[in-house]
Length: 176
Image (cartoon, rainbow, N blue to C red):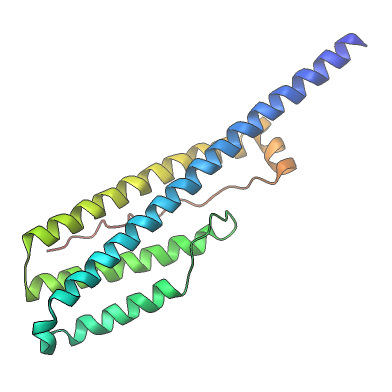
């Protein structure tokens, strides 16, 4: 009887420790997503500021204005929340935002190359890539824990699910 109680206690303790590890890994991934959202917002703000500084060339900015309007509409269509259920849609939205930002930066560089602005933008882009790599690493660890044998049982009981990774790097496009 004592062996059964000790064995059950050990299983419960190990299950709790596995669960705590899975929750920690999921939380790290969600924090990385928050950082990615912040960096994309900063990049967008920087692009808007630069577009405002180019108002003197208004006749050449028609294409950029259309892209900025499209970017604003896309950003308004989603609101980041630390919700593990809708991550795939956020990843897709962020990829589209990144592509629009890249297109805008390319078009701005053709109009008025500005090295200091581009340096600031590239620094934010690298920070975004770092956060994305951290997210993918955290998700890989979480998914491994969720799909391996003892973890899959604990994950099913506690409703912890596999999270998607970025299939395409944010900010990995060349900017001329």
